[in-house]
Image 1 (cartoon, rainbow, N blue to C red):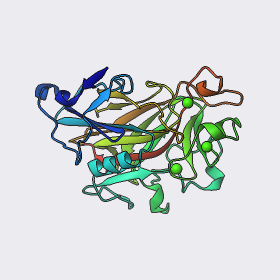
Image 2 (image 1 turned 120 degrees about the vertical axis):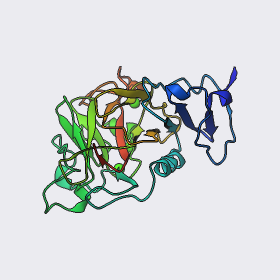
Image 3 (image 1 turned 90 degrees about the horizontal axis):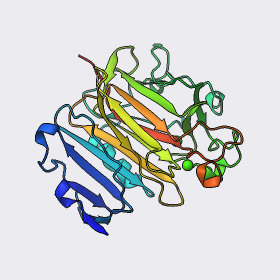
Image 4 (image 1 turned 60 degrees about the vertical axis):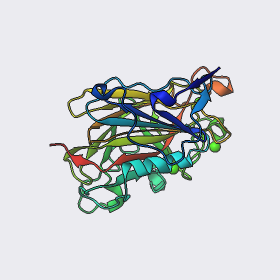
Length: 290
Ligand SMILES: [Ca+2]
Ligand SMILES: [Ca+2]
Ligand SMILES: [Ca+2]
């Protein structure tokens, strides 16, 4: 059964998906962001489940970008939506974005469950600039873990299950499956917000097991968005959400149904839970909350 999404403002581009949702007051208007090559406006319903929802839209437009399989083009498109340059120095920059790929995390903080949630927002003047990226992670679980072996040291089956999008390191909550990301002016304790946030997931087997929920500075939900299921051998899914204004003060990430653990198998390997890990984070330049 075919269904055209063209009239609802959605475009499908060579396997990845770009959705523009107008604000409530603008519902019915077309998307303001036109991709370069809208060459596939019709897809089967079965292969594109309805995984996008916008609970509340404060102003302007929100663009949701989802992809699975070969996600490189979608990640680049999301970079363009966040804007250039890739900022690498402390302090609030006028425009651009920040990224975290985990690959520079030192060995002493790799493959352990106590990776610091503030590692990427050091406020020590003597800390290197690479640790001042304005993102702070918190969790109600045990902690955080960066892996350089696809978490195969936790359970050998994970080596085949998970892959790094940027080699070699990936990221996951320790002892749980959810975390919150908040923002600071890079290298300071000053609360900040961003215009958008994106994450690469590895091994999403079920739509709904990997989601991000974004909140504004007053704690109001800006919507919950789900990653697509994996669709090729690499097993990557990308999910990015960007607003046309700087409104995202917190991102709640659910990475799979359950925590990793020795003997805990993925749903694709005889287990009951869809286990998912993360790689690259991309987000707008953190701007001081006024
Ligand atoms: Ca692997
Ligand atoms: Ca990486
Ligand atoms: Ca999985």
